[in-house]
Image (tube, rainbow, N blue to C red; front, side, top):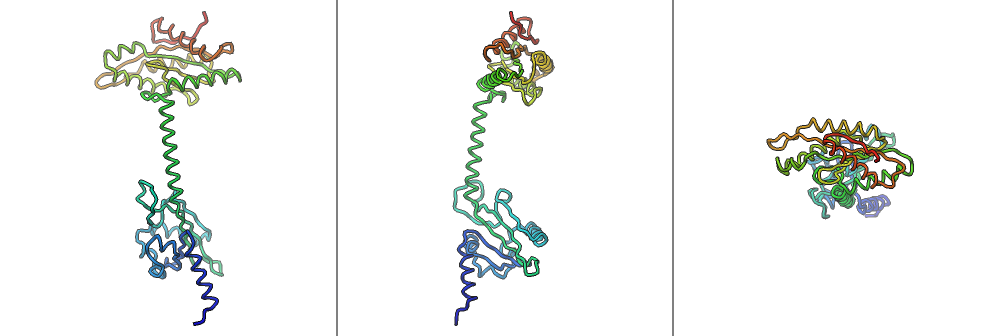
Length: 322
C-alpha cells in the first residue's frame, strides 16, 4: 500500500505527541477520548488503543466528574483556557511516582491546563487537557516549608521565653538597644517599664513552683493583652519583666503602668485547687537625650522599681534623678 502525505503527517503528529514530557488528552463534548498520548499511557498503565473512543469517566471512575463537567462547561462558554496548579489541587489523574515524598500517598503532583479547541465556526468542538508532572517542584516546596518551619522553631527558641512565651532577656535587651539608638538619632520618644511580682518567693514556697509558673504565665498573658502591637514585653529574669513602649512619653508610660498594675491586682490565677492573687511593683524611665546608652536607661528603670518596692510594693514609681 502506498504511503500518503496524510499518513506521514499522522505518523509525525503521533510521534511528536508521544515524545512530549507532558500528558495530552483530547475529549469530545461527550467526554469520549480522542487523543491519549504516550505520557498518559506510560503513567496510567492504559494504552491509547484501550482508551480512544471511550468515555473518560468509565475508564477512570475515580475522577471528580461533577468538578470536571463544571470546568468543561466553563470552557465551552468562555472559550478560553483554564489552569489548575498542584497547590490548588494536588493531582487530577492518580498516577504513581517514584520520588521520595512522604505523606502524599505516592501520587504524582500535577499542573493541569484545560484548552478549548474551536471549529471553523468558532464553537468549542473538543477539549484538550495537558498534565505536567510537578512532583519535583512539590518536593522542593516541601523541603523549603520544612526549612521555614525549622527556622521559625529556632527563632522561637532564640527569641522567646519558653515558659511565658514573651520575649527573652537577650531579645528584649537587643530590642531596647535598637530603640534607644533610633531615638538618639531621630529624636523619637519612648519609655521603659520594669516590673516584678511582689513576694514571688512566698508564692513558690506556699503553693509550689508549678503554681509559681502559672502565676508568671497568667501575668504575662494579662500584660500582653494590654499592650499595643508596637510595644514589646520581655522576661528579664526570674519574676522580672520589661516593657518597651514606643512613641510614649514618661507621663503616659506611668498611666499605662498604673492600668497594668490594677489589672494584675484584680486577677485570680488558678493552679490546681488554688486561686492565687498577685501584685506587681513597677518602675518607669523615659528616654532622654542626655542618657549615655540603653544600659543607663535600664539602670534608671531598675532604681525606680527598687523605690516602688521600698515604699511598700504594689505601686508605680517613675525615675527621679537624685
